[in-house]
Image (tube, rainbow, N blue to C red; front, side, top):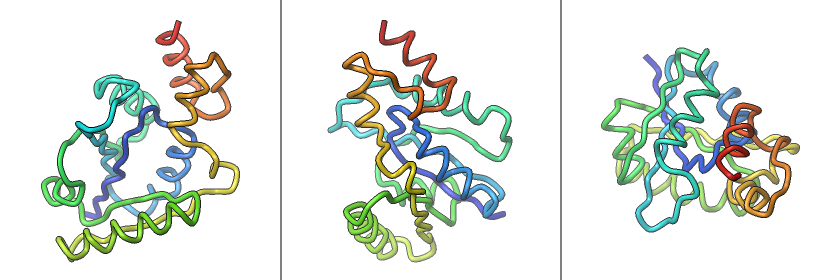
Length: 158
């Protein structure tokens, strides 16, 4: 079975995340959306809220699983039996960062392969950070996140 991990903060999940995962799904039998919990980062949404939103978006896609994790992402891949790690990149800055991470991961676990998917041009400016900023300032996020997520975020931000 080809199993992959799609890691990220998903704080919140955006249409850019959805696009990367949709394009990766045909390559794998199962994809775990791994919500990384970083103790040094202040989250906008709780881990439970992020898990709920991702589950809602993929409720009709049985080969997508959702789980939160802590620690090194490559170690979590090993723990869940994922042979692949999916990463999306939007820019050359993302590429350099992801290349370095992929090389370090390979040094630690050579049996786990990083799969890098380039963002479609229409999604390259979308990031969770920008969506949070728009939301905090009362802007409309409808074009940046899945519809169900937009509704939850609007209710939570009232």
